Length: 368
Ligand code: 0XW
Ligand code: MG
Image 1 (cartoon, rainbow, N blue to C red):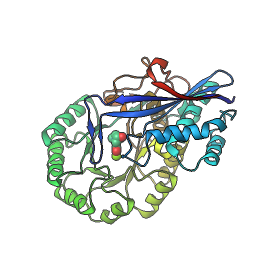
Image 2 (cartoon, rainbow, N blue to C red):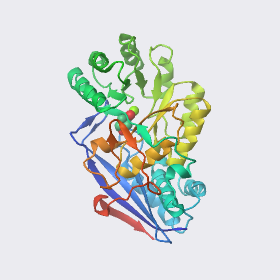
Image 3 (cartoon, helix red, strand yellow):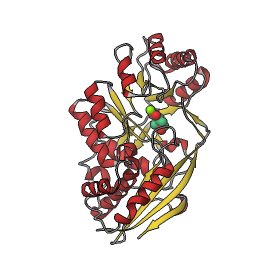
């Protein structure tokens, strides 16, 4: 089975109840890129990448489409049954740009699953479970606003809540953390994510002001070196998110001993197969991590669930997808949604979703 067509689509995903605010970014809508591969046997494979605006990480939507278009003419005719070789072929066509290669990797895994009549998680070696714990992420807000949403989400069944901090007076962040913990403490795990938004001294101040609160501190500072500098001065465990852009970053973080866990973004790392490698590296060192992505619709979400299902349950912290913040599913029947704080793993072959083509945005470029 070979790739015979590659189509690139663009779609805006307005944020429900937006904007979604983080320390350095305010999002009203996210620009997502969808890839449709068609095989010489008539099968279709879907991929997607949605970098969360141009500031969240050093990747952006126009870059994704340009990188895919750069590789596309040389992807036509390639085998759709050898994802490892395809990845090496892509590396020979374009240096870096893992987030763009991820869309191709996901689409090929979808197509391969359909070809063999197997789910992507089964191609990865098997699913540990069919129901996966979700976490909910709340944007920046006042102590009252954030704690009200946190209580609501815990009542709905979420067992992990992430709140945002940074980019404002640390005293407000301290008040938010204390208020949220007062309301949900003991009922759910709390994560405080500054999205690179604090200086080392601000992060230490927040941590020590809340020294009795067992939250997880996510991406407290901008660089891995800054995070390393506070590692032994704070009271909480650290998770690295934005600083992991490739496998080497993950290895660097582990060898520097900079963190206790990772917030892993599937597309940023390069797709399902790159994420599977990171899964195994984490397992070798018993490092807990989430499985998630920056944003994206049902295609990214389904891919994240399949890889999450292959993670040892003792190391899978939780799963996050953007579904709760997006107006509609691409697949009205099998779309990915949270139910009572959990996701159900899709059951169909490949990714297990069938996007309605009227819902995937505008065709940007085609190759055949
Ligand atoms: C909670 N998220 C996964 C949503 C946005 O992509 C940012 C983010 C995070 O940084 O953890
Ligand atoms: Mg984060």
